[in-house]
Amino acid sequence: MTAFVVRRILVNIVVFILIGIGVFLLVRAAPGDPVRMMIPPADLQEGSEAFIESRRAELGLDDPVLVQYGRWFLDAVTGDLGSSFISRAPVSELLIERLGPTVLLMSTALAISLLIAIPLGIVAAVRRNTGVDYAAAALSLGVISVPSFFLGIVAIYIFSLQLGWLPSAGMSSPGDGTGGDILRHLIMPAAILGLASAGPLTRYVRGSLIDELSADYVRTAEAKGAAPGRVVARHALRNSLIPLITIVMINIPQMLAGAVVLEQVFAWPGMGQLAVRAVSQQDYPVIVGFALYVAALVLICNLLADIAYAVVDPRVKVT
Image (cartoon, rainbow, N blue to C red; front, side, top):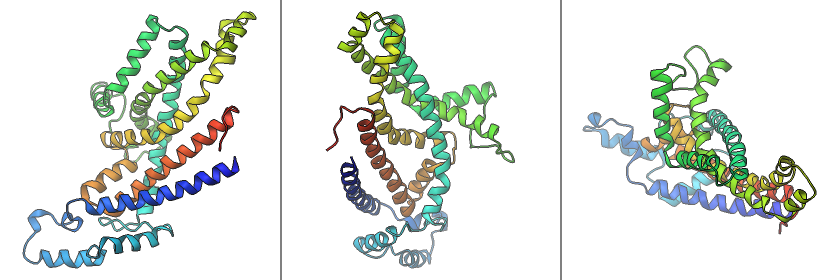
């Protein structure tokens, strides 16, 4: 196991470096000029070109791309991802400041998705090809098919504008910020993100449990007189949930993509909102930093999924 983990870490480091090169070059190849974005079009006049050129030289944007990458890489290996073109703040500080809200949103949504998917998948598998199974399939396919931003807009209209039960935007109310206030702001975005993830997980739990219920050891337990509930809970369910660990770990980066969208809808002050703003402003250092955080999350989750699967299932051999 140790040799496998070390080997995977080394491979992930190489992949991470290649991703960094690709993202850096793609961002620099994108059309547009970040320095021009800093000047409102109405203010572009005689003398602006001189300012733009001097600012480009100050930011090092007039150097060849390879020179820019080499300078950025030497700083990045020490943990310095540069500074934002717009706010001049260090990129690492900006991302870490936004990391907490995003982690809170994603972790809550993940808990909601599991609380929905596991019971619903069990019921659908045990009572397959019945009305309950069809209803669970319709619900899971429905939340998969409807875009999360649309659900967010509908939720804001119903629960904020019409009923007034929940706040429509932000992470806390001005001058408040208590735990209860943050929870009220968290309910809608976390519930919608959790529903979007619960759909495919429900189908996976159902399919995995159906496979286990048809296994020989289940028929043996039933032949020995074990109660149906005990067969499902003590035998089939435990084995069917083992692959779910891998699926959940792999789905975490996908959940981040949904969080980026919902952070815009609900004005949630997370990393996704920061990334969208950076793209609109062509803030290269922030875009690259965010992309590297996402790449690291994907690589770490894949590594943890492989390790967890091998630990919980002794039949899996890592090489």
